[in-house]
Structures are given as structure tokens and as C-alpha cells.
Length: 234
Ligand SMILES: Nc1ncnc2c1ncn2[C@@H]1O[C@H](COP(=O)(O)OP(=O)(O)OP(=O)(O)O)[C@@H](O)[C@H]1O
Image (cartoon, rainbow, N blue to C red):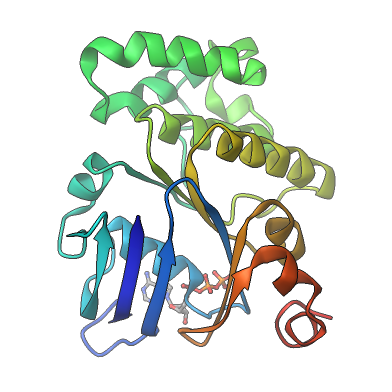
């Protein structure tokens, strides 16, 4: 479904944060992108979401080019990006945040999708009339993902969803992500919690210095002593 071919790019004309990335993700699959700080993991997600201009290479969804499209057009093709930070509106209620998530959904379906998501995430239903700033860190991440799910994406891009969470909150969040994936959504997730991410993903991508250093079955990568020693902190 998703193909990234020879992607080179960064934030300025001379900037090569991504130094030639190739990867593919079949429909409905989940891949975890792991690797050291500054490797370009978040930049890769932003490139797929249309937020980084490519110097060369291309990104395709079902064979049709995504690269070059503005972020709104990428979203309209069924790709939802959840950034690491500032991914909710703290002063608005949980319900209002979900309505904003549904901006690109067909207007006649917003109410039903909102009801379904409140049903799906009881923690959000309980707090639907409260300002989003009253949510815990883990609940905010659930809200950010639920906002993305309002458009029924085919592919969800998650940038470090567990950043700043306690180990317990991160574990709960990963369970939620695994459940969303089990319902059929393809997911590409960047994570610092590499082993936890590889444990719920089917595929793993190790990114080092703007290049794919290793790729393959997530569990095989997670148990590979060399990968653990070099890239996953032992
Ligand atoms: N908006 C930006 N403008 C310019 N440079 C940026 C921007 N965002 C990131 N960079 C630079 O791009 C490089 C790769 O950053 P990126 O966030 O993609 O890495 P990462 O692998 O996700 O690592 P981390 O886990 O530290 O976020 C870094 O050198 C970073 O300083």
C-alpha cells in the first residue's frame, strides 16, 4: 500500500536529514520505526504526511504519488498524522477536539463517528464535556489518536505516542494502539520505547543517520543481539 522510494530531504534546501530511504508497508500492517535520537524518524513521518519537501525520491499510496501533495490532500487520501506534541486543543472540550478531528470527514457522518469513538474509548466518553487540558498525559494521547480516527484513516502515522508517559501509562497506551491496529488500521509508529513498540508491531525498521539500517520481522529484530546492542541500548 505505502511505498517510500529513495527519499532524500530535510527542512531546508541543503538539508539532507533523510539520506535515501526505501520502505514499504502492506495494507493493514503495523511497523515500528526505531533508532537513535536525530536519526530522522520523525522527519520520515512528516515527509509521508506531506510536511517535508523532498529533494528526490517519491512516496506512493496504492501506486499513486503522495509526494508533492499538500498535507490536506495527503490526509484526504486516508493518511492521518498524529504529531508528538501540540496534538490536541487543551482549552476545548474532549468532544470539541473530536469534532475538529472530523473536519475532513463527510459532514453527515461526523455525529455517528463521534458516538462510535466515545463508545470505543470510555475514558473520553466520561470526560467528553471537560476541557482536554484536564486529561492525563496518556488520556491526551488517546484523544489525539481518536481525533485522527474520526477520518477513518487507512494509515495512521504516530510520532512517539508514549513520549513523557509513565511506564504504566505507556503500557496502557500501547495496548490501545494494538487494539486499533487489530481493528484493521495500518500503523507506522515512531518510538523511543523500541522494544515495547517492536512487541506490538509486525514489522520493524531501524533508522540510523537518515538511512534504513535494518528492516524485517519486528520480533526477530527485537531479539537480534546485534540490533539490541547497537541500536536499542543493549
Ligand atoms: N523543524 C525542523 N527544522 C530544522 N531541523 C529540524 C526540524 N526538526 C528536526 N530537525 C533536525 O532533523 C534531524 C532529525 O530529527 P528527527 O526529529 O527526525 O529525529 P528523530 O529520529 O525523530 O529523533 P528524536 O527521537 O530525537 O526526535 C535532527 O538533527 C533535528 O535537529
